[in-house]
Image (cartoon, rainbow, N blue to C red):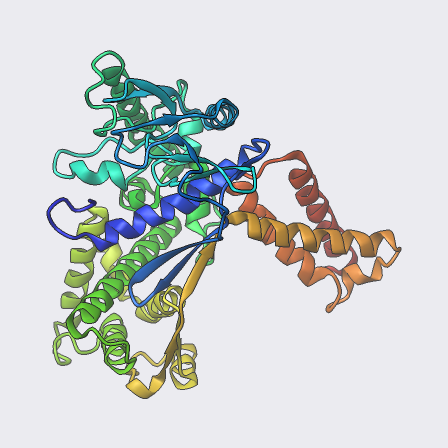
Length: 457
């Protein structure tokens, strides 16, 4: 589906993430009594698993939408339809016609609305909830995996059709062309206004540093991470430019390692860890510039050419002389290694960790240094929000009990405040802007300021 006649696992991985993103956005609409399953994405050895909580659905519970590619379209529950309409309006999505049924729908045609066996209303199959970005001429199937960010859609002046630019509305001669043009205009606005505005904001922010989570900044502006290359081209501030470069390099190395792991699995078709251990070790040594050219003097240039090849594939980006200097600077490769290992769930031996800390660039990784590679998971942001609010309420309870000394104690509430602040900041950036959450974040900032004034930390 995603690669046309050729298999495209990397594109399917993106589509799985859209399901999770849509579920979070539906939760944020606060539509009464409209349920989605709890979801979690698990990545392991290059493959992605979308996990969903079990919901009470059966063969006859679907009352809204299509599960056969649009040949039939159900609309058997007015109450459920009203809830989906309310949800879509909150997300700035419009009603449109799905052919050949000639019926109007809210959201994508393949979204399924169910009246569960428990009587509650559920929506599932959410990957295409948001419209696609207008694709380039050489990537027409991108309409199934390159979606516009929810933040961008919600900020658009007119509501958009989830099915624009796809076959779901391709034969709607009356409304289809206008729906398609509205999404093209939104995509144009992304490239001509929103991305330049993001680059300007990063240029003006003097706090950009290595620990930044660029995804929060990008997504809050409505920009997908696939546009890292374009933002990097517009950046003028050296520090921000360098950090964006490292973000891109880490991402392309992670994608390449995933691809190699999938290829190895296809080749040997066994679950034994040893073949994958050797593959990962060789790849990590490549990041450290080992084993590319048997230690010859042109090794750094070959390494840069390899990085540029990967960046060109994923971000359509070409390295500059300043980029080359940043990548060849001391400890750059080691820093990239650490980030890739963390994102892939790889644990290396203390020998390698100490070598990096002590800045020993010639250290090679052996199979004995590879301890294990665990699965990594990404859950719905509501879980982090819940944890942040729980930490906040615990601190508030202590302060209500007149224990202000806990605020300045090293082992007291300070770590809880810092963690709550981080979790709530991320939740707000992801769209959780309800008044009680903003109020909690403001209180945390005030308490942290009090601690600073009292202790000088």
